[in-house]
Image (tube, rainbow, N blue to C red; front, side, top):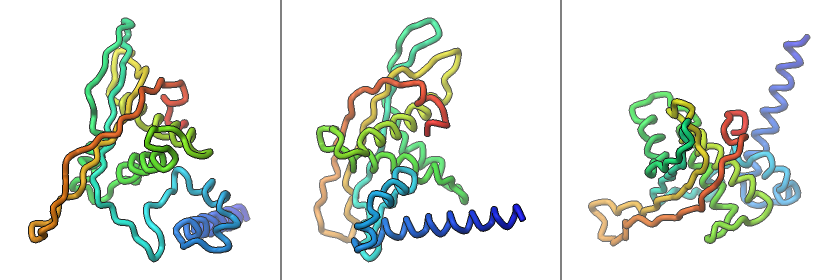
Length: 201
């Protein structure tokens, strides 16, 4: 009996999730307009999609998310790290990996998309999801920058930036594309206790 109830609940949750994802990626319609807020609350930030039905949006830029941190040592001193290319680390973990994890493939990229989609060019939040997107990427970056710290050292502040460059035209194309890197640099963020735990992710 318990197994049947559990299977039924799993079936219902699966159906709800698939319906929410479909409404999120489908062209605007009466149902998606009526339940737009509920759909957004379900999708963001963990299940955000980077495409729409009938209107795929392939990326034409390379966007690397990079970070640096202020580290407090056990003795109380403060050191600042250099910039770490977190996107490159994810790419390296995917290379020659036949079964890459969802986290390595999508977590950081989606967190950055979520942040830029809910902030203006001055990094000011737009709408109600601005604070949530900041908390989300701050937690991810804090945990990543904390990996490997020893001897009681802790991350006190982090700074995030993106390095964006256009994809180079193929050799057979005559198109001239500027591939110089441009940076979007966010302010320093103080790390709060909830940023240091996986549960806050």
